Amino acid sequence: MSYPKIDFLYLNEEDMIKAGVLDAKKCIDTMRDTMYLFGKHDFLLGGPKANEHGLQMNFPQKSDIEGFPLDDGPDRRFMAMPAYLGGRFHIAGQKYYGSNSHNSSLGLPRSILTVTLSDVDTGAPKAIMSANLLSSMRTGAMPAMAATYLANKDSKVLSFIGPGVINKCALMCYMEVLPEITTVKLRGSSKNSKTALAMKKFIEENYPQVKEIILCDSLEEACRDADVVSEAMSVTKENMEEFKLEWFKKGATVFSLGSFLYRKYEDFLNTTMVVDNYGMYEKYMSNFKARGPVDEFGNKREWVIMGIHFVHLVETGAVPREKVLNLSDIVMNKVDGRKDKDEIVMCSIGGMALEDLSWGYDCYQRAIGLGIGQELNLWEKPYMN
Image (cartoon, rainbow, N blue to C red; front, side, top):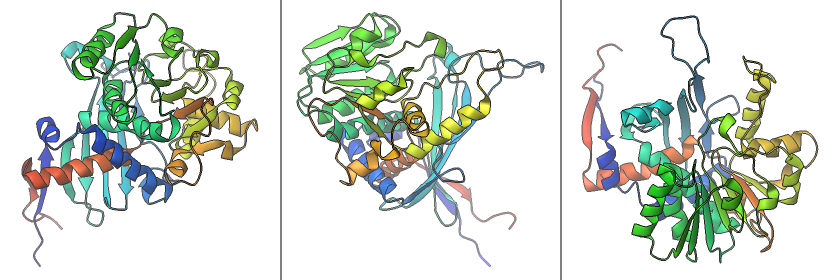
């Protein structure tokens, strides 16, 4: 019996750029397709309920083993995020990455990511690709896509909390769907942080329609008077500032992609609450409870993800489940997004491997059409079978 050889396409970061990974408009369209398929349940994620973000390996804060890796900074972890997405994609695969805040001292990104696309039936790899830009673009495109349903069309003031790579990509995408933006507010770790100044320069060089860029001294300043707020922070809990609902103007739309510390949960009852995957936040809450009320040093645990705040309100009976809107239902026109000009919309976007697969697939298809990438061989025939 003969066995077919298995070849797959390898795409490095330069290949991905040539294949259009930074095409904001197309990425937004792909995210819309992805959420439509999510709403149809034409997907699989990991876990027994097929809706988990991924499998994360965390390091301990202390160990008796010499040389054992420790949790000595924010986002110290490895993570595998498997998924299947149907529809026009019909692809399986996973995003995999390691994350270490100390990478910056080596001139490396905090996280180093790859995405693998696999044949749904055989499991054979179809592509392995550099995924730092892919992941950042799909993350930034999701709130921009959601903004087409949730933000006021005449939004003029756009505020970024955490002006790093994710919000830089989000900026590229917001500017595709919010044409009247003329003011951008930036809140970094300080008023003149390296990332805030870099974002300011990027805006000045690429978006002449933005007439005013404000470097903010505080979280409150960044939130006040903003029509759209885009939060994508990566900080330790000790360094987090707490948000206040009173800071947001009538009609504001707030997207949280990272950490949203808020303790007066009942305040959210006066807002429109939206999530990308409610079941994912339920799992986060379950994991939070399983770890116990305090950490190994006796410090009180607190959740800092907007979607978990919403789950807490539902589980405590403060609000019925249907009051937390599914972004996919909005995309599918099952429910309305923004209903009036003055409501405050709070949208939690935690990200899913489905988005990496869909955008990775579209880049892969363009790479094939353009003859980009390096074809590699897994085997001519399996040595053992």
